[in-house]
Image (cartoon, rainbow, N blue to C red):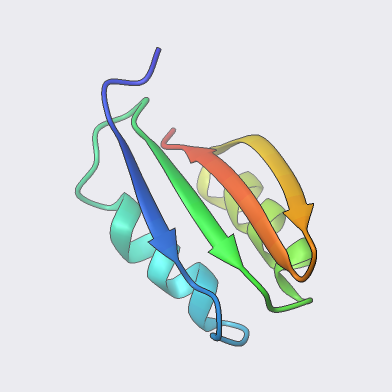
Length: 76
């Protein structure tokens, strides 16, 4: 179970800003902490999972509500 969870609203931002902001927000968190990310950039469907894989984080969950995608990322 994560010790804390934050939310990052990256709606309105285009590639690569959602991933850059996610990286910055993850940096001070402890391993196992989670962050919920909201995006509306179509490129995030590729960028967020790729970032998680490359950086060693875990994509816990993703879904979409209209144009807004929700991602839950656990810091690796």
